[in-house]
Image 1 (cartoon, rainbow, N blue to C red):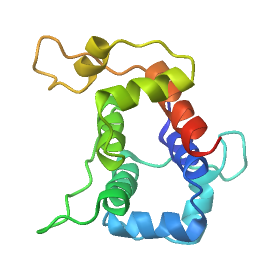
Image 2 (image 1 turned 120 degrees about the vertical axis):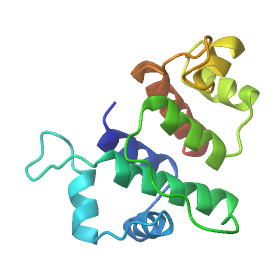
Image 3 (image 1 turned 90 degrees about the horizontal axis):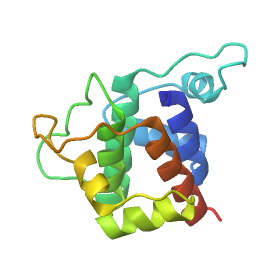
Image 4 (image 1 turned 180 degrees about the vertical axis):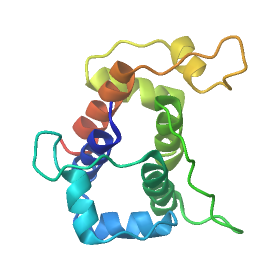
Length: 152
């Protein structure tokens, strides 16, 4: 999955308008212009499409965590320079205060079967033997489940 698609899906699932999204980027430590946001929200085949870089998506996700959970005391976390599906999934889990059962229910809304053991492997540290890379299919179905739950 590309970052632009993730951004578009989250925007739709949570009814975020341009102003909300600009605020989330700012909360995450990245100031962007409305024109830049519109470019990132374009589809790949549209003229003027530009990919959103990992650091910018990480700032948006950090802002999303702050929106849903509130600010932590101390410094804001710096946006990661590199993201993978596991990190994106973890940030969404944190933002929405989801437990394993909640995630499995959201995945089932998208008719995606996944076990608790498979899920726990996605949130382990990469050094651990049981760690598993989150494939695009899992993240795509999770985002679809979020859409079905929050925007039926």
